Length: 282
Image 1 (cartoon, rainbow, N blue to C red):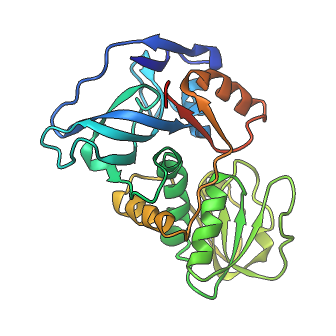
Image 2: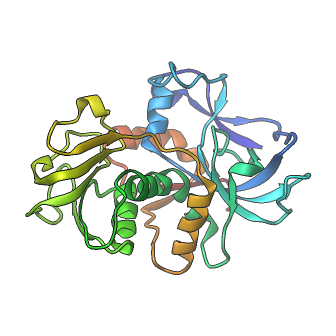
């Protein structure tokens, strides 16, 4: 099978399109025929070695954290051959086949496009946890979301679904110029937070990027978090997509073999938005 593997740390050229033997699932694991994976900005940091102190990689390392696929070998995992699933892996999704722990996977409703659902595990869970866990957004609140990329678009939809009044801004320009105080400020981009003076006393500033120690001080709570796997949240998010309450915006579908080029385009600011990477013949 084909697999996109890192052979060292560095720029996009360290990613190679290799032919390797398919992985073999162990106890509690399943083998997936990969339908799609995605590019996430954190994977560029992984490739460059910025996360070596917290994430040790065995090189060569098969890339790909988000996975959408069909179960082709299930063992006694509780899943069945033919199940359509998504999940967040520790790597291995950027290949024709991937092994995944069954307990990190969630079945995809028939109403949801399987390839597009690959956009949900990291970006969708980041938005969900920012909105519902850390900001605890409720109906009637006013929420400022700094970031209009994939995570930001999910966060806007989830906050509105919760009944909040939402204002979204981008680091480069205001999508809706913010006015008036806000109860929650969600900071979802790797840039300095803007408009934090609008947070009302007792409000909350939640960051998925800037560490709490670097956030501006004020008469509000400041929290930084790192997204975690949560299959219950992922299933709830899938249900919102299935009912049309949340939409998935895909900017491009590219061959998996384009992964190195996608990394280069992202580093040069030329990646248009959420990009799906599809194995051959998908």
